[in-house]
Image (cartoon, rainbow, N blue to C red):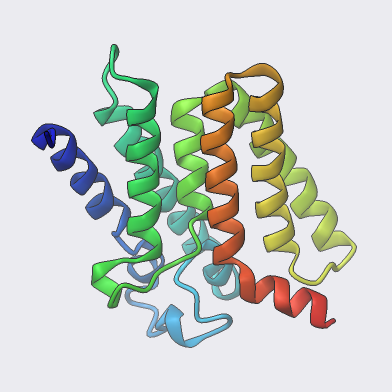
Length: 193
């Protein structure tokens, strides 16, 4: 039997995740973020155009991942519910109905999910992200944003395998695979040189 309350919460998470903060952050600038840079409506592409608007995008995208899980996952719920809500928010971001079911790659939103479910390990993972991102920028790595993003999820998954439980680690691995798949063009660009 379908739990209508759970289904409604998943729908709310998807719709909250679908809010295109990259597009909203660019309002008034005369720039459609989907027509510049990579064309991706996400933090890294906005960063190419405007640092201040990129900060707004990051807050919005991380916030929708964090808040959907934090508000809807109740004490006593199975741990899988928090992951379901998180995946729904990330899918909403990646397949936004407001953008004809296109969207960003899900990194900032998944970072918010990570913070909501495992704040201590997420804080370590986000520090790892900053260090790898800075190193990549300093050394001028091609696809530095993608490398930092995907390796951060790999790092987070390893933390959960070592210190968490196997179900959480498997869910994190599933998220990592999905995010890597969303970056397949970046991988192609990287390997093409």
